[in-house]
Image (cartoon, rainbow over all chains, first blue to last red; front, side, top):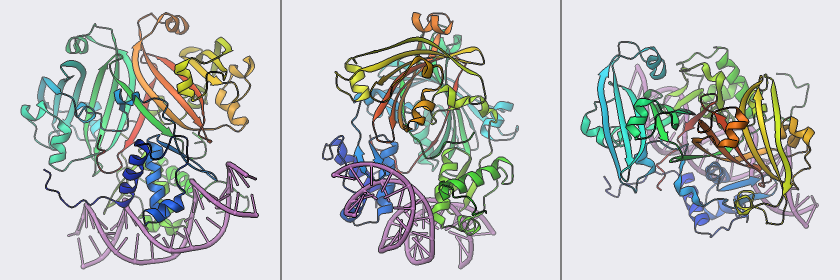
Length: 249
Length: 249
DNA sequence: TAGTGGTCTAGACCACCTG
DNA sequence: AGGTGGTCTAGACCACTAC
């Protein structure tokens, strides 16, 4: 896995990481301006565009904000309890967001079949392309966490029960499939009987549902999943940055 | 192209709008590649960077995806029912997302007071700076929609009951305050008695809660609000685009 | 008025995909 | 091997802020 391989990292990412470190270690103080983009460009021996690209990521993460004509400032972090918040713009898998905790899965259902019309539309496939149909309960440190119902075209990659014990994303990554885009729909609803039983909660109890269509680096939809999260157990956070003019519908 | 009127719009935004129009009118077909960035740059008499900036917005909206070494493709829109979905990365106000529908507000509570510690932290203010405390029920086409509990430092702008009948954002915009950044926390929970009564739902019924800290163009937190949405009535959509390497931690 | 970030240019090279 | 998008440069000018 880690053979101290050559890092093909991009310059703007290194700059981003470095400035982020300096913010998190309070080298750059909250409320205070960063050095000017011109200065940073000289410091990092690069161009201003690369600096801007790095700062843009920090903006999107909510760590800084930029005022035209003034400077870029470190945001006073209103809440430091982000530890318990799951970023909505990162992969949603539990294994990803809880790397340092004990994740287990209970496989409730695993089979292959042909897709119905909704699934054909969601996965952009024909009716004769078989899909895996997977239901898993995820547990974090032994506590019930979420119920995931996943469908995936079988031609993406062969699955088996052993793989499903761990992280599907890790497995897919190991065979060269990366989640690069996703479309997520969120809403609250009442747990139906199946969800309630699986998560050991009362039927009708609130759950947060996230429906996700995941696309790989080639633009193919490789997964459609519906995840239900127990009320109040999971909170998601999202930083919004408004681009420019008002979008006229 | 007409050079008659001086438009303060930016070039990349015009390109973005134009390409978007061509996608939505099926001039560029789903699954098919757009012209190359080089070609688009010539077409629009601009540089490739400007084209890339326009395409980036389209990517973030989920309309296209780009494959390095191959091209930029129009995404097959899996679902066209986006009409009923509220974009999570746009201003959350009902008045914004339902411009063409009839919005009304019931003002439940309106007063000013000193902030408690949580509010001081959320709004980044001192304990002696008074805030408005506002509770409103929003209705769309006469149907109960959401309960908003908003706190805002009084020094931002004077409010009165008349303003609160309409859109706070429109009012703030008219005096030069724009929402440019926001931090949102989402979760599902049970409606407490107050929420249930206000929305005419049963106590304990699921609601989707969005807590928002809103920042203006000067980086000041000008609003902290907690909005509760009735189960299944409101669905939010978010397109995620993963930047680059895995973010460690 | 000076200084900042935002936009934009006209290139160059690199990483990657497809024939 | 040719063509594509991604990165990066070294500038210029504009929009805005602050003094």
